[in-house]
Length: 316
Image 1 (cartoon, rainbow, N blue to C red):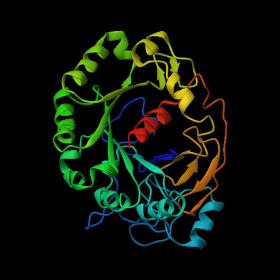
Image 2 (image 1 turned 120 degrees about the vertical axis):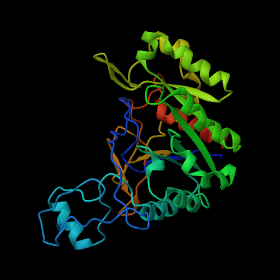
Image 3 (image 1 turned 30 degrees about the vertical axis):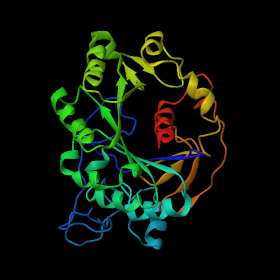
């Protein structure tokens, strides 16, 4: 991949885990599906008896494909699309605007999306993808192991506070046994530093021979804010490193020109701070522009999300 371009896509906002540091604001809900296993279309104009009602934009609604209705929705400041992307619209957008881009599919937990394996099988015919997953559902998505190995890379979140070590090892061993390309991402939570368990967790990864990366915790813990916008703490540098290598490799104008963040609502931004809207999956438009945003990306503080995806892109 000579010129690295990455689109970081949130497919949905529900997850079977509830990590306090999740940047997706995930909710523990499942989509409503029809008898064929596809996400059910809910028309918010009608109640269960078919009577017209005021618009109630609920989770789990897919786009209602009616231009006049959508225009009316816009005037009401409501959003009928819910918290997951329509995969047909996403496929159209990717093949129209993202030729040659690496697509990273995240959530929430992307494997919760019904029939997701069908979408991945189709999209990998034109794009390479990185699947960001907690791997807890891989045992029921084994069709993914039949895809060409060079088209899909797994980035597995290691969340020891959400599951047993034994179940995590079982899930990652499925990737290992099926000769997939994968890496385990361990977020260095300050609680693990305080109680000393971080070394135990790193030892688990080393003992099992898993390729792994350690990334910074983002969020608030114990009334203290942690952010890639802030200088790294000494203990972070000691364990993770200082990202200096990436500060010189990743172009400073990546956000908005070579890195995009696409939300589960279909909006396209220059990165996860959602400051500049640059396109829409549903309206199928994209305006790339080079945005050097010092508050988001500087030579001193590399965004862990861009760094992690960039690292995988170099391997693919």
